[in-house]
Length: 119
Image (tube, rainbow, N blue to C red):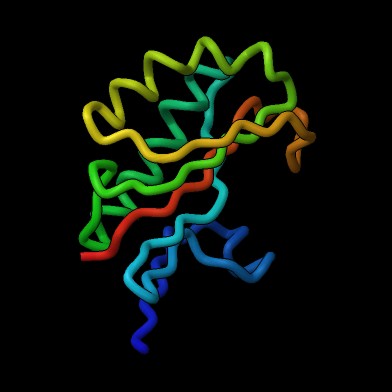
């Protein structure tokens, strides 16, 4: 089986020992991704932009998504992201789970982990 690893150049990838995405076994597995900004919606859009770039490099897209997990420290903030997510996935929504939990840094309001079909 061929495995392709996609790196974004983030210093944390080398420091922690991970990559943004891995293409293997017919799927693109995107690591949990946080975004930049002050609000949950700004961070959601930013995280989706990073994910979108990794998917493009893998030859995939949000239209190929099969599974997504959202992690938020405050579940009450998730509803503000719904229009962004609906716009992103459009007519091809994946199976989804939302988990309320602590993130690596309190400044982060959402982390998104995604799996798509590989090309």
